[in-house]
Amino acid sequence: MGNDMLLWDETLFKNGEVLELGYLPDYFAHRDSQIQSLKFSLKPAMRNMRPVNCLIKGSPGTGKTSAVLKVLKEMKEYTENVVFVKVNCQMDSTRFAVVSQIYEQLVGIKPPTSGVAFRKLFEKAVKYLIDSNKILVVVLDDINYLFHEGHADEVMYSLLRAHEQYPGAKISIIAIISDIGVPYIFDPRVGSVFLPEEISFPLYGFDEVRDIISNRIQHAFYRDVMSDEICDRITEYVDTAGDLRVGIDLLKRSALNAERRASRSVSVEDVEKAYEASRLLYLCRNIRSLSNHEKTLLELIAKATDQQAGDLYKSFHDITGLGYTRFYEIIGKMSSSQLLDADFSGKGMRGRTRIIKSRYDSKDIMKCLE
Ligand SMILES: Nc1ncnc2c1ncn2[C@@H]1O[C@H](COP(=O)(O)OP(=O)(O)OP(=O)(O)O)[C@@H](O)[C@H]1O
Ligand SMILES: [Mg+2]
Image (cartoon, rainbow, N blue to C red):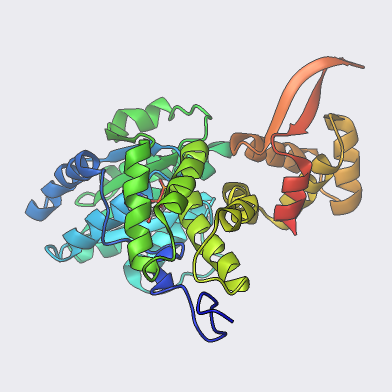
């Protein structure tokens, strides 16, 4: 056995942690102007003034959440009068869930899940804020998940108008939209008080991706594990997918593939094999946020082709016992998160019928549903 084989207790990872989801990198490049805009908008808080609201937009995996977290981390060291609350709207997708998060992070106590009205909980949170003489900055991350059923407008409206009802309340919002091609316009009542500084996160260029990936390689792996050729190959995949997360996931999975072969370095085949899973990252993340009823409906849609809404409803109702209203709410939610196409087309009994299709390959959907 030559020494190009990995011993069973050896590893290619020098520090695998830097490849985990949620890791906030020290090296965060090519976003200087966006970070500057964010800092300028938040700066008034240093002088006890309400910060400027921000609207951050960009495709998945372009560094939006990371950039905001970097700035907040830095600001926290300089201010004591500002409370930052980050809400993940993919997890907390109703008005009540959002205000519960705010209350919990602000007061430090989990509010009861039932028996309290939204208004009551919101009032308590705002009173706490006024009494402690602090400024609240709410980061609504992935706010696109709040768009259906008007939740986003309700939440924004309550937060932005709080000072009218509770004088002295200073609340500002950083709304982050993961731009998946669904146009969205806030309700005019929200628009007139939101007036945000808009900050866009364009896709990274090829050289920028390569720079970020090669830096992550240096931190994650021992020398010579990933050749320049491999780095370029992964960069190409990111360039196609547009999502840097795919690249970081590829680094991890392809190195695991190499370890499985007991190899000391990653091959092109290791990367290609890894891409089969990494390319589904976005879809799986999207599906993971669905409720069980929503998953049931998606599965029904994936299993059939070009279903008419009526037939689909029948099968859905048979399994779940849920009615029309809920059915259409779910269809609406899944089309606004780009899982479905719900077109009005073809001729049905009473004019036009809705054909419902999934936007992804059924095999891929079934893989993520597993
Ligand atoms: N400029 C950068 N330098 C280093 N790493 C980066 C950079 N931009 C993004 N990343 C990395 O890419 C991954 C995705 O970034 P992030 O989660 O911030 O994207 P996002 O724009 O919020 O995506 P989404 O819209 O899907 O929420 C993270 O692991 C992050 O560390
Ligand atoms: Mg994000």
